[in-house]
Amino acid sequence: MAPDSAAVEAIRVKYLGRKGLVSEIYSNLPNVPAEEKPLVGKNANILKNKVTQWLQEKGQTIEEQKRQQSSAEKRLDVTMPGAGATIGHRHILTQTVDDICRIFEGMGFVTFEGPEVETEFNNFSALNIPIDHPSRDAFDTFYVDVKDPDKKDRFLLLRSHTSPAQIRVMKKYTPPLAVIVPGKVYRPDAVDASHSFMFHQVEGLLVDEKVKFSDLKGLLTIFCQRLFGEEIKMRFRPHFFPFTEPSAEVDISCYICKGKGCSVCGRKGWLEILGSGMVHPKVFEAVGYPLKKYTGFAFGMGVERIAMLKYGINDIRLFFENDTRFSNQF
Ligand code: PHE
Image (tube, rainbow, N blue to C red; front, side, top):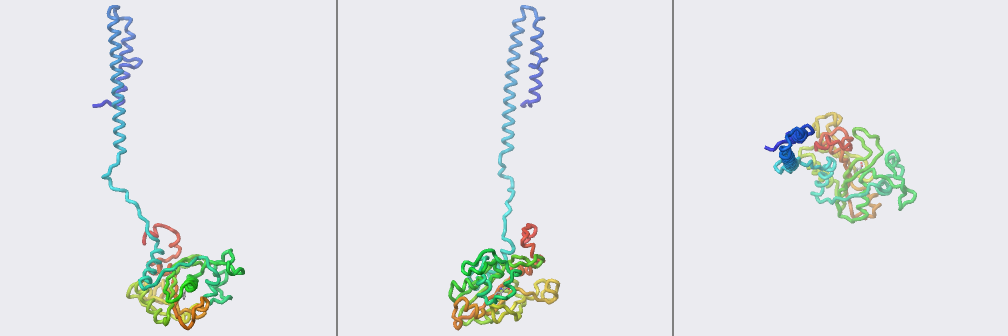
């Protein structure tokens, strides 16, 4: 068995230490009879050399053993189970936007994206929103400190809805067209459980010859059934938007209480999920479409609201706090 370093050290002290055997022999040498002195001296040297050599060898063995042991400890054990990497996943809002877009893409719509910084023309004027409309007020729209390059007396703004993308699409393409536009929109609202200064919308626009309101109704009915399930009930409620005529808001039977009435739907049993209508002739005029030839419909929905209803989320701020205890639930 290999001696450990303490045992080796004890042997060194015993033989070669200051009060060890070898030095004892040397210090006793004067007492040794003269004729034996050479022999005793010689043997003492031999003993000293042997012990020194032995100590050296053992020292090396111990070093070697230590080296082997530490490299064995460091060696990779390929039979150990892996630590497992945590794989990220898409945020629940991204998933909801994708779910919405996939449903419309399945019905022939093409996804289009518009910029978040827009002109007053695209966000308001072209959408038949009059110059004195309250939504143009700085209290309802974020204006950017940059002049519109095309209209030097006007400032750019952060789009307050995705509807300006309708204008961009129609200026670029001629009908028939069917597009879906997901994106961020901004409004200077005070943040609370149901308001955020930034949120997401998905806009839809379809223009062709002979498009009817019943086409819009049919399309949105199929959409809601695919997103919320076959058993969902819907109602189209007359409404007003400057850029659609006639206009309707769409309600679905409350997803939480199934229409019975609860705190989420304010005991009404219905929840508003989108705005829609037939494209206003003034909008076609703004983009230069021949009025007699085409009709179309448009709709816009709030993604956070839809995700909150679908997954029972009660505070819009949860989407933006990036707390993984929230996001890992979806
Ligand atoms: N832009 C409207 C809003 O933000 C929604 C809408 C879109 C209504 C298209 C009708 C047609 O409330």
